Image (cartoon, rainbow, N blue to C red):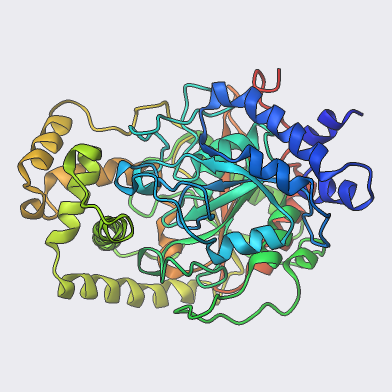
Length: 498
């Protein structure tokens, strides 16, 4: 096989082995990756910034003794930043702010031997489950260019699915690793709260809901990368016990006989596409065949749970604006952002500190109730999303709703609207698409999307697996078993590799 064929078919672990065995050099891998990026990008439009010169220089240096030495990598343009790469987070309010130093996560990526080729697109301020920022333009799904990549790690997921890189950085505050993993046919794990670092620029992301890791083509890559980046950074607000063994080792051993619950019913009552229900039912059937104890069950979620989450989300949006103004030294202007983003900021600023505190307390109380479910079950399986990847623009406001959003933003009415019909309609549209993921950001539990199903017309559909707090090892062992029984990454997107 040629290097190009190897690059397309091998995961990051196997590519690093080639470097370690001196069958290929980092420079050769980087040039192959650049060629793939340049071939795929005109169709995918997933890149925010390119750092090819820096990547080439890094690839010419000494080969380091690291798990992913010489492996090409992409950095999501959100949360974790690299010195010298302009930061956007999908919006003009950052005005190309260039970080003076790497965040701790990026430092660990580099220490693991990864070579960064650039940053990838996100929706504006990483707020939506689709990557369609007005400022930078939408990212396209390699399996169907008219469909969403999901969000907010959409650019990263598009290029991993297209084999531009074997894995890429991703973050998750309400599903932003798992959603695009489902839409693009990848493995995507959101770690336990506190497992990976956010500093020094961020104390806690989205009141503790947001955390970073990656989207990958193989389970073992995700596990071995988490080994390389896990652990709190200096001054982190959370402490978490270190795992008993390595996550990479967990991905190589049998999970044993697990108690697995499954449910295809959305916790907010949203309609679930038949293909998503089939995906979970087939996964549950496979689990039974593998010897696990499987039954249909799900934790109880309060009716107002999504409203509570939304209020904390809106407060985090207003916080993002304040942070951007602090770092850039320039006040944000309404004309710089999308109407819905400006409206979210205004709504977030309209809630009092007491209201935010009450909402967080309600969410934390409910977290304890939900955690009790995992005293009975080792894992919960659900659809990752309520539908296969939607067409571009399908989640945008339309008609009267779009007009009202525009007027509310331009007239500065956001803080007076509160949680009224206009906000409820917009939130319900998003949560109908992604009802299964935000809960686990609030509970802090690890959750992963596994690419176990494909629709008759060739669209990927993910199955979400959730474990108890701190138990990523069980997820990796289980996911690796499922990967072996039902290979996750053997398909290639037609038309992108030509």
